[in-house]
Amino acid sequence: GAVVSQHPSWVICKSGTSVKIECRSLDFQATTMFWYRQFPKQSLMLMATSNEGSKATYEQGVEKDKFLINHASLTLSTLTVTSAHPEDSSFYICSARDTIAGGHYEQYFGPGTRLTVT
Amino acid sequence: ILNVEQSPQSLHVQEGDSTNFTCSFPSSNFYALHWYRWETAKSPEALFVMTLNGDEKKKGRISATLNTKEGYSYLYIKGSQPEDSATYLCASPRGGSNYKLTFGKGTLLTVNP
Image (cartoon, rainbow over all chains, first blue to last red):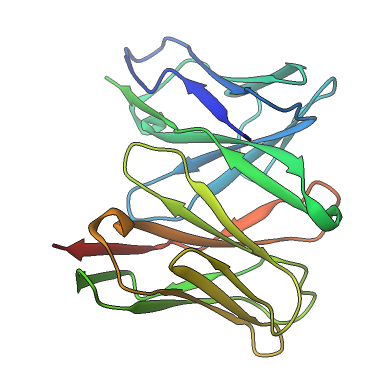
């Protein structure tokens, strides 16, 4: 159980266009999902927290108008990179939060999306 | 800012060797420590969630220990196999209800046959 899918797995787009990435929890409902970005040889950096039915909360330094997040259902969150530029080229990965034994949380990850902006 | 450090950055071992690596985190305001295994082109896989000082958890040939007083966790792999080759990540949550995780950079393990 606890499977999260992410689509597409890779995408190449032209500078100035927008790209949408989907994150789905396949076998559980997730009121909270997270979007991360990873640069080479760096750790996963949290970009934003996506809450079902409400606005996403963004980490410091992340432009909310550039990285639009929509969490319209308990199984789907989307990240749209608007007006993409080459510096947005990166690896983006999502996770969905679930409650586990003892009342703690676990995050289950999608496989990630490699975005290249030309 | 929560700093989570992992060492070594990478590790090469021979099949059958046992190995271990470290995750360090601030000991103050500790809540939990997560370990993940991330194979290339796959999703990071949750291995363990550890919460209590002295915790020891095991999953097959992989085990982990936790010392919250000194702020470290060890991950051990007994009798490494090539399929154990992956990046092993640890993460600790910051405070707050959303349970945001701060990740280390990971340890890349390569097991040579």
